[in-house]
Length: 95
Image: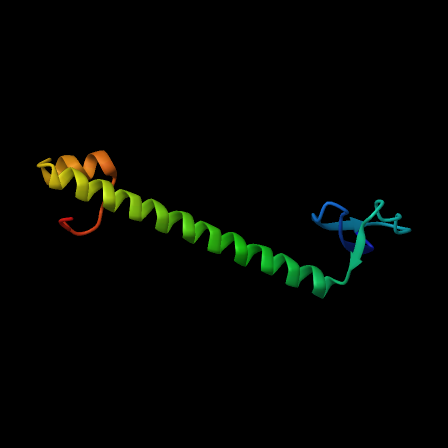
């Protein structure tokens, strides 16, 4: 069972949570010690940024699928085929 948990940011910026038993080891060169609260806040900020990035990627994919779908429909491709080719699942919107 761990006696303590060390929290720190490495010189490269990675966040680390390390359970230790007995005497706490020295931190790696260039590491900055964090409190549990600081670690949790930084981890939360990273997760929020990751989630925003995922949402941006999804929105971009959806916009691209819609644009491709509209282009195919405008060229006379049947709706079902345009949906299959683009993966577009929204309403039938003409461009």
